[in-house]
Image 1: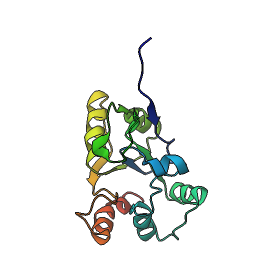
Image 2: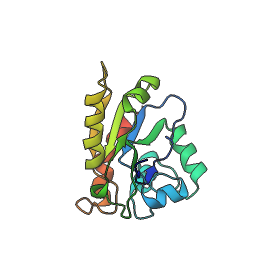
Image 3: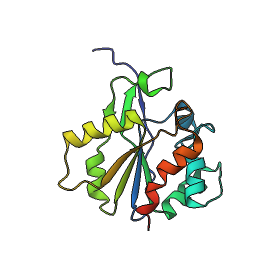
Length: 171
């Protein structure tokens, strides 16, 4: 029997009733996997951006964060379902990525009008997933600046300005 490397598996999607916006990341960080919370690293700007855009209080409570996104019709998931176990948390270190069925997710949630792709690796994998299983009509999609603390190219204010596009689809 061949020796298979250990694999890490991502989180279940955050999915409320009738999502209008889908935020796709690449794969959860070690901290996110341990806490079972998307963007759990306090240095990641995701929750700061959401609190500004949605005018909600910043919480470190998994259930409350999830509920607030669901109430605002925002779904969150990752493009990568699993990867070969790795010590580091950087996207560039991801090996043997297996993708989630993004097209199937969109087919099951036809209220999704916009897909915000969080960073370059997520964008690269999203494009591959859509090539492998094209939809007759894909919702609008845009690569957004990564909220990762490793993305120092953009300030928090610049990220907020870029991410503001999601508000157009929540109306």
